[in-house]
Length: 275
Ligand SMILES: [Zn+2]
Ligand SMILES: [Zn+2]
Image (cartoon, rainbow, N blue to C red):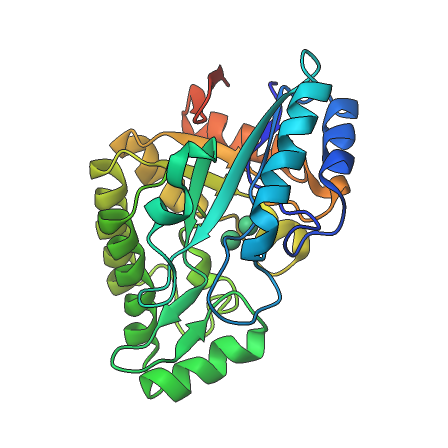
């Protein structure tokens, strides 16, 4: 089993420790490769993204580690780009001059039409539910549709390599206000998958929701992974770790899940590995 993780957070954003602590953990667990992916800077106060003025220091620190650990582990300087229409910078502007080795594109905040407000799908559970009432008049279908439409807009207008946790909108719901088995929901997932396929992006099987207890399933769900297989969409495993001890959480489980579904390999931006 070739171990790697390209979705990780550190003290530069909302993770806990120094970059080097993650590398030491990765080496001790026999990883082939490790990538850092701080949350991209945003033009408003928040608790999770890297500050614009710390980007150079992040890139420099990652470069020093690449040199120091050369031959022991392959290190990559990535970024998790937040797409919020009207707020986030164009991904090309943030990633100018090829300063990052790879880019994850993610939606955490859904922009409300004709309003400066957003619906936070990845914050406290309470905000998820109050947001549906406040911004969508309690219409959960409208809310979920807005999430997937923003995801599709990101796919169509922004350049990136990996789509982050693309069905995360289900996380706090836990099959309560809607079921992911309903046809309207499946249709939204399907049109998103068609766009992912068309744009040739990599889907990550993100294990974080399960090991934090926030979700009963991985992002995306097993059912969606079967669709990915049918469409021959490239898949990789990510743990979205925020602490060094999380870097391989549920990696083996995800590995065997993909194998059982029929995937024969994983595809990362830098290498392919047989399953
Ligand atoms: Zn994310
Ligand atoms: Zn993340």
